[in-house]
Length: 267
Length: 267
Image 1 (cartoon, rainbow over the protein chains, first blue to last red):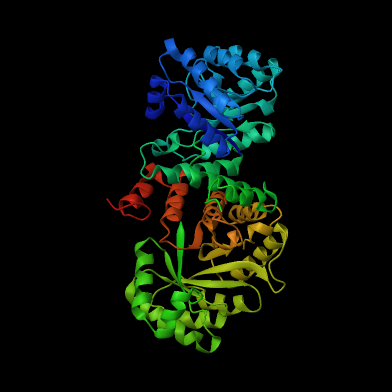
Image 2 (spheres, one colour):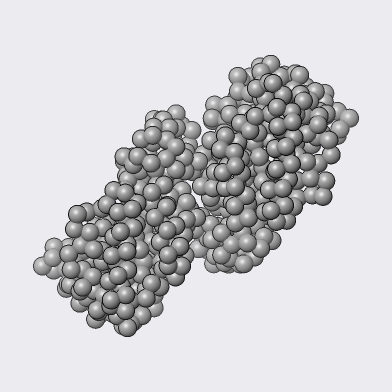
């Protein structure tokens, strides 16, 4: 499973405060702890006013890449910021994210073409998030046309089918699961990603919904997730799900994950 | 989800002790607490020497049906004991279990034909647990021939595909998931059941494997499980999974389950 560690995000109050105070130690610890917990990428999202976003991003990236070798996911709703941030990283990471909205793809895809950078791509366009599975697959197909045009390999892409909150969904996540299955059937090498917390908005004990969502989505083919790798129960379920899906011979990863304290106590 | 509460089983040391001492209060509490936690059936398994099994079963059934209105799952490896136990129950319950082994079906099916009794049926025969999915589906098909012969409706049956322990499985649970999907495709009204703890034998933090197993199996169509309904994390994941699968309109069951304290704190 590709884990995109979500904790360095200015939308989180403690991180906003650290950004405000330029508390490098706080950010460094967040980077290091997520890397140690098994994150594949450390997401870096300033979530500041646009006037200071690039400067904040640069400060964050500098701290993170001095704290850990784990690659960075440069995260901004602004594709121009993402493209500038790419230049600051000392190794290929992940752009979070593009979609068929505006000219995001036209800005980002050329910047990562012929590199090892990966890119999250959301299944939405200028009309918002499509309702039906067919419409989302149409957006997906549009993204893949662009990917081909700019020579981006399917394996560089993390498609986010965008789940809506469960409390108002009419058919649970069945549509999203069908979309995931279809995407993986069309492009076995592509990654499917997603956040695991929007789904539970407005529901009690959100962790149960988030956890069951992630396991079901992995069952359908999701192999990347934007989550908190320090959440041991979630990580334990991820390791267990991979083993159950036959992706972990003799459960060695599951057993090693335990020994390394990734989801259980260190022995 | 049909929950078969597993806690009254003489294989559990505290229950064996209660049976030995004829501690009715202990058994009564186990029955009541599982019923209150949302069990659909209270499993009753003596796990004693065969010479005292029927007498023990009778004692347990008497206590359980005086403690709760929740129907009983009469549980014995001995089909003759199951058939006798049926006669002691004051309402239809579930026989746990038959298989294609020996003459179990020939004993049990006539006893529940034209009644509302349900029956768990394991996908094994006199040769043991078949290795391949095809072989299990052959056993399933043999069971369904018998069911038709004795006029047992698919909706009376809980098919247990029998999972092996994950640590030695070659392909995770993919074979079992495919068998579940095929069974539900052939008979949409049939139930698919299973225990959720054998799977994790010999692995660390077994709860993660058990929980992920149950969520993945529910995703494939499992709608019945032999578990401990007092395990709140497992129950929370079950409620969440049903909501995610579109089986719980507006998450009302999930929200009510929370309000009733079935998986979260009572408000």
